[in-house]
Figure: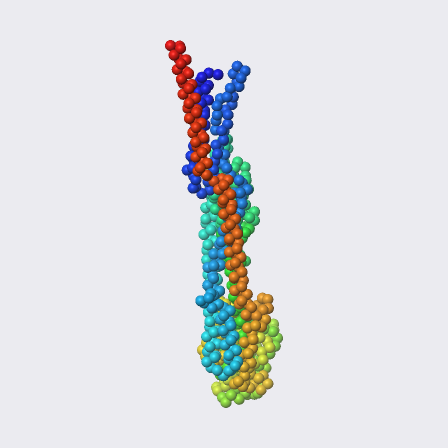
Length: 577
């Protein structure tokens, strides 16, 4: 082997060591680059040269630049990032509605309900107390404000969560495009070339990690280094350089637009299993929806439960005109049974039964004693039928007005009262009611009580004699005991209003604690995985400097070989001269 062979060997070493130093320099330069994975140069001997029966080495070459990664650790981080973001999103969303459930400085719904029912207890102790009636009305208005305010804030939180979903879909589509583009670049660079497009692979894994923080995904390794991205439900999102974007579709069961594959009606499956979008879906359709349902249920059971008792009661004054708070869909009141009118929230509570209407003259004497019985037949009786029966009672007239309301008028000087309603008609159509509405979105104090607190009933009318002693407290006691009476008028599980309000607050507290616990667990897991990745794939500048010194020394030694060989060549040339 000639001296020129030694020069070539040394030259190959200079080149290889320089390339290795370049790899180390790149590591140090990217020590703070998010998602960067440490790269290590792999040196290999060049193919030996056979000469005079011997195999002489031809030096060294850079055979590979290996990207130091652990695929299982990467997948664990992607999954953890998705779950952490999910838990964090839910926790933040729940914390945002904390004020809805009251605090130390602001009484909550349970406190307002307690004050309302205690006011009725005080009225029962003194049924003729005018001041206590106004106290009841004030507490009732607090409840109305509390329930409507809670619902309004919860619905606003739902709407905000849905708007955040739109923003996240836009961000997810950008990342899907980026992943597809990187797939194409990686395939182009790696096909036919020894080695991997390491930096591009780092960028793609970072993009996948960021995508997983928005929606739960699963990654399948495709041919030629590409990634196939699917939703957790198996919907294809990226294959090679082809992307299927997310979009909003038609209104789903939640009442909000569904999330579909763009230009199709295919609803994306598995989105609620992780990521920010999953957290928003869980918050919007889970916790917030449940709270709204419970708030509506409290309003519904409070409204109908109180009205059931109040419509058969009497206040300090008796009215000369009574108008139903609810309006019929059938404006003439002639074609739809009173229990089948879906525009009346509690129409389904009407059953076959009766109620009594009592008429009093100007002196307060019943005419006649015992009143008149009005019959209701479920599935048959129309609103106009009720008006017709009322028209048959001496001293009053009744009609269904053009808005679908039942109006009962007493002749001049007469007044009207009601008792013993076994049909639930009076409460359903809000005749002589305390509350108006069917849920927290429309609950209100009835117009007659809003106009005059003296219309709040404390006692009942004796259905046999039509008398109503001023000291009677039957209705007030009944409403007071309603607080802890198990009831249901909306198909929910039978329980008391007190339990409903405390259960709502308890559920919120449990949900917050669970979300916080999940976030802390995923956060600790995230830190552990990040530490493991940093240990395995991260850049340690001390180690890189040591490697650089090693390659530098090899470079210097190779340069010395060239210098020595050059001296030998000079000596040889001197002999020739």
